[in-house]
Structure formats: C-alpha cells, structure tokens
Image (cartoon, rainbow, N blue to C red; front, side, top):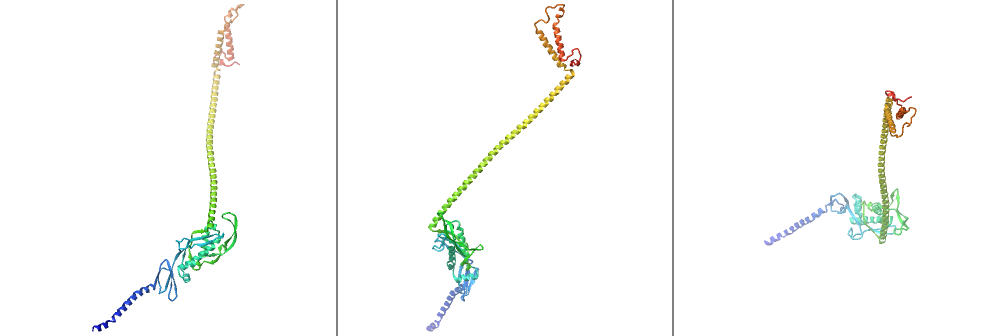
Length: 416
C-alpha cells in the first residue's frame, strides 16, 4: 500500500518543476521582451533603429520609440572634437594639426571644434550607414576635414605672418574651408623681406582663385556632404619649429623696437606740441596781462584827460567869470566915474600930490625969495612959498582936470 502510494505520487514532482521553470522563464523573458520592445531617446541624443526586416528609423525627437527587437545606435546631438597637442585634452596622444607655410616653416596648431549631427532623415541615415558610430564620425569625417583645411591654409601666408598680421586670417581660412570646402589656389611668386635680415627675397605662395568676389572651391567639405554642422573652432596654440620661433621672437623684438621708437617720436612730438601750446598759453597770458596794464593805463589816461578837460573847462569858466567880473567892475567904475567925474580918485590924487609938495617944501632948507629986495618988494617976500604952492596946485588941478571953482560933479569933468 505504501509502495503503491509512492508510485502514484512520482509524477507530482516533475509537474512542479515544470511550473517553476515556466515561472522562471517568464521572469527572465518578460524584461527582455520589454527592453527590446521600446527605447527611450534623451533630449541630448539622436538614434537610428534598425528593425529585424532591415528598415532604418531615424529618431531625433526625445521620447519613447517602438524597438520591436531591432538594434539601436545612439549618437550625441552635439559633441566636441579636440585636435590638441596636450595629452589631457581629447586622446592621450598628440592630435595637433600640421601646418606648412609658404616660406617653408612648419607649425602644429591645437584647438577644439564643436560639431552637430544632422537631424534630417536622409543625412542621418547616410551617416549611420557609412560610419555607424560617433567615434567613426570623428575619425573619418571631422579630423580629415580639419587636416585638409590646415594643409591648404598654411601656404596662403608665411610663418611669421601667421604669428602676427595674418593670425586671425589663419583661423578664418581653416574654419571656412573645413565647413564649406577647400579653396582652389594657384601658385604666385612674391617678393617679401626676410624677417631677420630685411633683405628682399622671392617666395612661392598660394593665392586663392576668386570668381565674382567669392572663393572658388576645389571640393566640397565632407561635413557639408553629410549634413554635419561645424561650429566655430577655437585655436589655443600654434607651436612653430625652433628656427621659426627664433625668427618670430627676433621679429617681435624688432617690431617692439620700432614701436618704442615710434612711441618715443610721438611722445617727443606731443611734448613739442604741448610745449608750443604752453608757450602760446604763456604768451597769451603775458599778452593779456599787458593788455590789462594797457587798459588800466588807457583808463587812467582817459580819466586824467577827462579831469584835465574838466579843469580846463573850469579854468575857462573861472576866466570867463573873472573877465565878466572885471568887465562888470570896470563898467561899474566907469559908470561911477561917469556919474561923478572920478571925483574920488582925482581928489585922492590931488591930496597925495599936495602932500608931496608940502613935504618937499617943508624939507627945503634954502631961501624961497631973494635976500635983498629993491623997489618995495618986501611986501611979496613973505608969500613966495605960498605962491609956489598955488602954482603947483593949479598945475595939479589942471593935470587932473579939476575945477575947484565949480560946485558939484561938473567941476571934475575935463576941460575941453
């Protein structure tokens, strides 16, 4: 009975194992099915899905996409390629680009450039079918394009020009050719001064062929063919050959010397101008100082003249007044004299003359009459002095025009 029971229970063990196996398979297969059924696209990427039947889907918008067990290849929407000589930038090897200039000099240029994958279906599918991954795109499109641009840009200038006046042109030429295609050039002979000796020499240089002011392209850029967008590149170093470095250094020293000389000449010229301006300013200052003194003197002279004119006018007025007063006094005296015949003056003169006669007679010590008189003349002797006085008085009165016998003003009138 026990044996029978055991025999009947034998099939139960394999059945459980099958159930467990199915469950395990479901746990394993279900995630695999989920993973290979849909794919999530991030906003910083684009992808190409190749379905089992060979169809290719270009996915550029972020979101979920049905994979249907197809293979998925993702590309960065934007990436940066380094062509640097520094080992800590990009690959751990020297990836700088080689330049050869028209004077035979060499240099290695280092920098970086950003690039963007095409987002239109045709170009994206073409890039995917040709290259298949980001690394191949960089090594088979980006780098060869940059190398070609560097190779054709170097001969357009000399090594010393690339370090000085055409430094920006070098970047412009490389960037334009990498993005749009290399230039068609022709070789020309140029006479240029040697950067060290200054002696003129002939060099062969490349010249861009132009048509309607636009460079003629030798070939189209691979980046343009595949719809890859190259952003402006950045050059962070140009390492020249040692001989070229020495030439550039010596040229810079010479240029600095010339610049210093020019600066000194300009400074001297400016100093001369400054001194001239200062001299002019001082002269103008002195001139205006003299003008101020002159103005002061003129003012003083004008004031003196005005005062002199006023003094002269005052003197003239005083003179006129004196004349008028004199004329008035004269007229007054004339009228007074006409009124009384100048009796007061005449009397004063008469009195003064009489006094003089009296004094003269009084001081006379001699005899006024003879000491011996004959014929009865003694009666007249005593009156000799009186007679003299009378005679003199009469003479004086006659000289003064006085008539002592006439009463009133009429006696003083001159006799006809």
